[in-house]
Length: 164
Image (cartoon, rainbow, N blue to C red):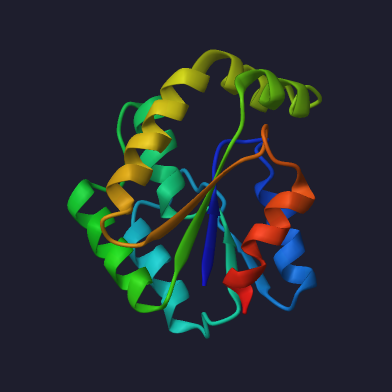
């Protein structure tokens, strides 16, 4: 299983669509303001055949966006660690995509909500993502690609080995 993570506009869905074209099944986790039992939600996916599954976002987003936008995450660090360990046991790797603020603003110019979030919170979200990814590396493989420095085809070439 692969988890594709990063801020809005970094190219997650574009990369996930590449994986789908190469035989993987996509699952997108949307934010659900009413769902407080996130651990069950994120563990449920592990009951599926995860060998050809790619996640467009995951519990990692809650660990980033929760503290920055709402002042807290619905998942604490110990629960997060348990999720990382459980996902690692399902042979999961994380693909962490980043991009410059200017590139994200340009890419999300047509979505005023995403644009405003990036404009206001880019530095905080970037710092939180980097911190969470650094923590995650102790438990699961994390591959980092900067979509401001590498184009879509270059990144696809690099991630081909992850889908074999």
